[in-house]
Image (cartoon, rainbow, N blue to C red):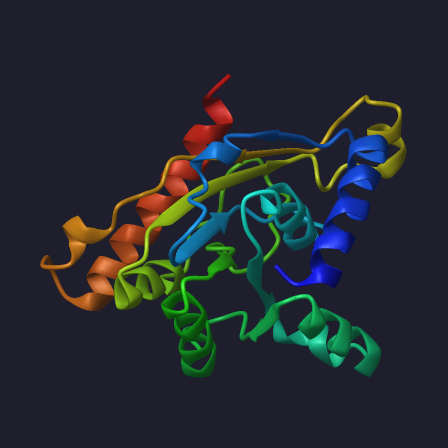
Length: 206
C-alpha cells in the first residue's frame, strides 16, 4: 500500500469512527493476497471511501467510479485518480474499464465494484448490471459480497448515534463452477444475480 494511501486511511478511519460510528464486520473474509473483486451495494458518494478504509488493514483497494465525477473539475479528477479511482461508464460494459480493471486483477490487486451501477436509496436492491459477473469470469477472480448500511443517513444522526455506518464483508464467492456453463453473457448475468443475493443476505444476518 502506498504511504499516502495508508496515512489517509488511518486519518479517515478515525474520522468515521468518531463522527459516523463506523462498524466493520467480516474483515477476515478478505484474502490478503491475490486478485479480488469487492462487490457492494451503493447508497452514497461516501461508499468507495468507506470500503477503502474498512478494508485498509487487510489490503489496498482500487474502485470504479462513474465518469461524470471525473468531469466535475480538474482538481477532483486528479484527486480521484490519486486514490485509485477508475472511471467507468454508468450503463453497459465499457471495454476500456474492463481492460483496466482486468489489468489490476491480474496484478493480484483488489477492485471495488458496485453491481447496481448507481446509488440506490430504496429498501430493495436494484437489478444488477452484468459487469461484475463478466469481470469476475473473464479474470477468474473471486468476489467478496459487501453490504454498506447507514452511509446515506444525515451526518447529525450519525454523530448523535441515532444511526451508524456499518460495513459487512461476506465470504468469497467461488466463480469457478460457472466457467463451463452457458454463454459468457448468461453466466455474467447469473453470477451478478448471485452476488446481489449474497449482498442482500448480509443484511438479514444479525
